[in-house]
Length: 157
Image (cartoon, rainbow, N blue to C red; front, side, top):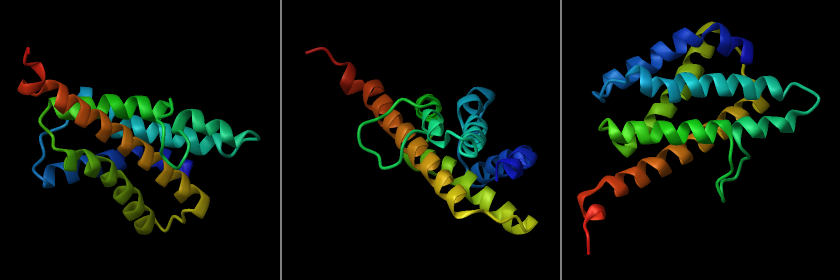
């Protein structure tokens, strides 16, 4: 799957941008894309590559573990946190944050079907783990940023 994602990276990002535009969401600028879907896609590819090595569990440094719970430091978690903050600052809603990542899942699935590309079960599980961790980190930071920037949180008592 990592070869498929690498070969179709530009197409997948374009499909995600199109989905955002169809929802009427604020436009994504280059700063948002730096920590957003393009960065996530690169980290997903990196995770999938590491999982083909003799030390597949090292991929958790990039993707984080599955199952949620206490936040773990990972490349995906850190960049998704930045992405959630950026989206909140640019007027996106929490729903749009979730759909931002879901768009990539749909783009990958749609393109794979169109091109007759099979996705192995383990690869799909990796995709889901990466998406879950990114969404959790982005939404958590989005909510935290929203609370800290609200007028009532800045009131002196």
